[in-house]
Length: 483
Ligand code: G3H
Image (cartoon, rainbow, N blue to C red; front, side, top):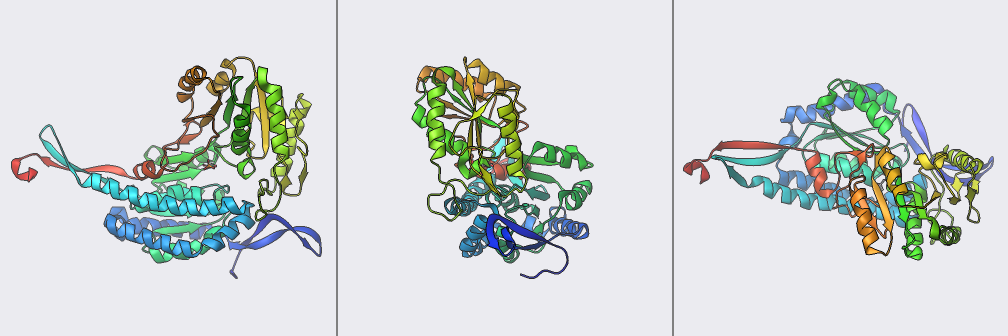
């Protein structure tokens, strides 16, 4: 596709041979939204909402569902191309890219079903203290939806789709990486929804997003990323107390492997939790606490299993470790490893610490302690820091003092020990996993977090509520009205 004006080159994390040596493959180009175009997009979203009187917010639930079904139909036509672009743009394996696309389609279909249920619930009349009321679900206005590169399609759609189907109008900032994967879907948005309903932007946040927030016309900020960026954006809004924020933010989820754990189960689940998509998941396990009695045996098994993971390109068979899209990530990860080594830890597994261009082989680092960057930073990469502990109070203290609280995974085969650990962690994080890795799904389950990890709740059911308000139509419960 040829564009006029300023464009950004979208470079793959995959290097290819060129006349000038190995280079990142050029996947395509994308035009920047200018600050002026960004404000025009805002005007279009505001006009389409029209104080709740626009075509979209006043459309019946049935008709909104029909538009969404048309979108899904058009989206599915683009399946192969989107999957291919995900692999080239963010280095996600063929299996995981396919899963991301299919999970997104399932998410939209489940959202449609959930809306039908919610609508049935809203159509019923309720009576209390002589008043009869219909409690409807009404939209909130203009929603600004933004998300990260690791699930460029799926995660953004977990806010955009429920916000849209509830009758809001949307400003949608494409992610920095995984941007072209959206390109085949933009036409589908255009064909399926009324003009001005979904408005797409791409560019630097400080140039095109800050003015949107400063305008005060954004009613909901739906953001998945860091708390630092989210807080910065919220502060720009002149009526921040009237801004609804649905946020999924920082995490550094811990695994706790006690001396009573099945170490083989703990190893395989900790690998899934720490290294799926090269550790680039907010739900990833980023600190593995292991009780000292079994630490040596656990680390040995873990290192052997990590060394056996197959590195390669996203489309290679059985590949587990692929190139990372963020250009500065390999150097940052190396600095984390150097810091851990300088403070007394070792890289335990064969090939650990190896990096070449955008490719970083995973490292099991042991013993990690609170003097190291790896203990504190999310690092969002293929490093597995292992922290030995004596008593269970140590990982509990870690979570009490942490600025985040998303998930924890407990590994133990002693039912009493598990029971004693569930209670403190239920009040410190938003999901406690027993003998399994941490993850967001299934998408019908609530997804949220404590402290700096989240604001509001996402899931097929929760998101419909998060992007709407309960609005009553009420009257006196006379005999005539009850008819
Ligand atoms: O990066 C954060 C995602 O919400 C992780 O989702 O647990 O399904 O991989 P996931």
